Length: 462
Image 1 (cartoon, rainbow, N blue to C red):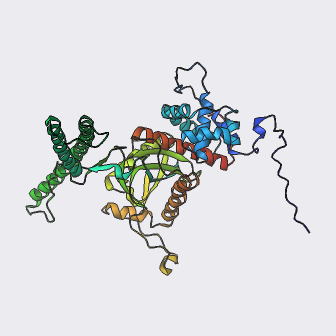
Image 2 (cartoon, rainbow, N blue to C red):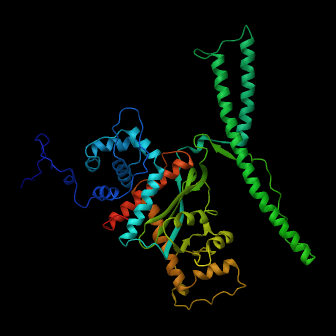
Image 3 (cartoon, one colour):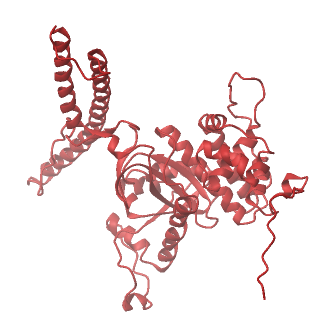
């Protein structure tokens, strides 16, 4: 029997539905985003002023276009413009209009305040429909490295900058002598001495700026290390005066104010830093997020250029506190320091209790031994003389603590996996901490929209 194929006719005109909303299925993400963005206050928008007439695209439409594009893995303004022609869902969202890439890019760049307000209002609407709790919330906090829009090969070290500037000075002097010599050997075709001098002077100016930036960073580092050094020395002196004995252990080393030879700055994006990633050392930013363990919504998002998370607990909790009141905070060992945890757990006032921080203080091997499978009673509560590490270890040693801490890897790590793998966001398109922070907030906003659509939530005004 002959195989019957589906008839594919590309010549017969199609009668498309008269209503654009019928072009995509009823429960499509684009319908949810269009309806949800209409509930967001866009009065704080910075309208594009292009001098080409008074016609402007509606801010709610441009915001919805950015959110839907980021939620579906389209981040470039040129790709977003192309999708307004090629993607049926985007044509529906834009009502068959086509904002150009410059309009899209300008709107995104100038409206960080709008993105922040949309993020807050979406969480308020989520709380209003019962998806998100405002108080007594358990939050999982973590950071992930996102590539900067700069190559690590564009970085220059302090030693290389100093050496290259010396070489450029010699070359400029040689070119000036060559220009003064009447019988100088001419340069290759198309090359002139003034142009070569100017090129080297521009290169020298760029290296001088990089050198000054490295020296400024070294000075800030020296100030912080000097304060820590003085505190250690004062503590050591007081201890020796009280006991009459010399303190054991190495003497604290006086910090050096000069930059290290390997200190470097990137010439493309000087704010980004070289960070260790799963693919080796890369030019990155450190993107931070806190997520509610019940709804799996991101409730706090920020970006820093610190290569590790040691000092990030306090600013992360401050970002989260703008939207919800956290009770339990789950972090990994990279965030742990006695000073940071103590500050986080201290009560802000006499009536409001501080948060309780849970962290894994020791590395556990994969899998569980027979002894771990056996039922055990919870260990006794540490006494007041117990160290900080002993108190933290006890929290995750109890049955309730283990169950609570397990929520961390079930919450924040899958969220980063969705953002990097499902959405495909692995590199920032913008440069500088301010613009990179805007882009990360937009990514997190798009993730929350996608999560609420997945939960089939019916949003209503906050």
